[in-house]
Length: 471
Image (tube, rainbow, N blue to C red):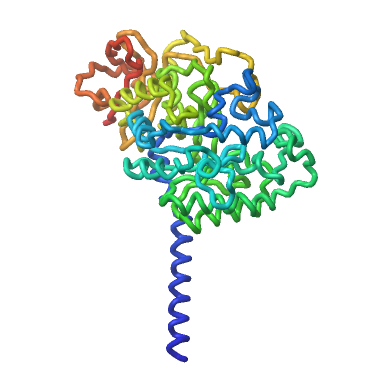
């Protein structure tokens, strides 16, 4: 009896120690270090809407990837898309290497978007790719495995407060029922979020965290009507299974690890961790006629602006229903990758300097980013508040006591960076070109730092990085 009591107490103590260690790990700020250093990730919106490619019933669909509710399609009819969804060209390793070669350090993909269709094997709910489609496999398993193989961090997107498959999901934006499935479930007043939370959210989050090995991020979207108690419970559920998992702010009620801005870059320096998710074209999911993407120059400038303000860029593209990253997305990412291979030294692991940017000229040009149809103007699908202006300027970062100055879109033979004028009391020891062995001709004067600029090749992104060491 004494031995039994001793063993019971011993094992209880071990369990208690395990819980304490787990909680300590969950609360440790160290889990954010890789994310803060990464700066650049790939966002992938992929689902049944990828199959229809922006069309429905022979016409351009309202609402793009949200067309189920904007076209007022029943769950039964929308679900028939799954009968044809067969991404036979999906190549997880190619996706991961495309991101890696672009200089990206992590991937976030839609495990379940607002339509409620799971892009993974979900034993708790048969409305999923493995059960309902001819593909009959779990592409997330291959993608996570490829990320682990190639040292790419991985996260699941999960639509938290919009789900058009479930009868208990009400919404209140931009008005009552504004983003709800009112075709199948028209009475908002009888919907009880907690029933959906228990029936679908918790089981599926457990599946995402237990079926694939290490998951680095859970990226929630549209929390809508989740309560503070449910947000807290959800965070605890995640961290009890995977203590190192990072959670974004859209878990709601202050329980996230970092803030998200959508299609927008903050105006000034942000002290707390933040991330901007931005589309390459106009839409999140694959739209066949969305063929005008931001230039690689503009997207690289946006990356630098975000990093200079202390954030990460999560750059989105929408793969096709066949499972392919579009040629245009691959082309842009490859161009960014060439630039990153040479210039990323002052990006990864950097922090903001006291000055974020310096305008070099008032001259500017503006890129026009618009789909060919020009018709879809829905706030939550088409709005892109990021600047499309190409302005000669310098973006600054700080790393290992050196300042990195990225001179953007400047085509004169010599640049003057006024932030380093002698009156600034910054005594420069040396200036070197980032990623090259080329000698830099420079001088520090009372007007500023003068640097002889390189000439750019025709297809080269016209942004030059310089490492500035102070005395």
